[in-house]
Length: 399
Image (cartoon, rainbow, N blue to C red; front, side, top):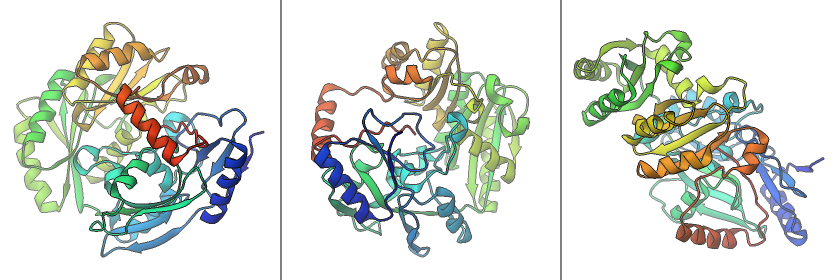
């Protein structure tokens, strides 16, 4: 049985890593255990952040919060909701698509750079991260960044840790900025567009000064699995507007007029909007209880539908699009088809593909993350050696 360590303090975590460094014992870092299907490395142990729990500081006036890495995300969001504040980047919840349990943690959110539909306008998780505390592979406690945006000391180091997937260091504490919760939100639904037409409609919407905060296309194959089946018949191209009620009303009228040239336009009000975008965020159509391979592919917005069209000529795929078409949730019918996918990503101009889900043997045989160019790989190796010279941290968390 794999040993699991749950230190209750940063100091205890540092001592564990110091001891592991002496024996060269590898660790897999685990928060809530909701974002990975990968086991600990052979001969390795699990280093859990669950004991590093609690909100350290919350300043609603400055719109910043500091929390220990193992703090459940739901605890953070509940505290923010009391002050009508939120995380700008809408961290996704992968328990449905991965079939995992437990509670997502705030450290896991930043370690995986988990970013949802607002990513293309508000930035990724790393863009909200102001400061971190962490334990490196030598068992040293390091602090970088600060609690207010104007303090940029160590900001590059902060961004380096965000999205490192537990491969560089053990995050013990994170400080991040917040945004006010919008007064209201609506979604305009343009029905019946094919993927290419939807790409054109979303590009038009994003070119307007109406502040679209979410732009996604849900083909007919997945449309009925969103919003409790409440979307109109046909493929749905969905555009979200948020803000003060009076402003949203004016902007929605302008956007509806522009979209009428593409297809029939309908509207979802606030509660249906919140439900729909949670489902888009979490890949709800693929929370189907199967291990069928699921990819998250990031490409240029115009290239998303081109990639899917090319793949459909050679293999069975199902897909929907977020981030104005730049994020493709792509489900294969049988095998991950990694070589085929990565070849077509290169053909449409490049991008990144992360294998979120597959059978255990396929996960073990696949490059979960996008292979890097030689120069980038060499740089990453030097960074890894600086943070973790003995290679103790071997996490393969996906987000």
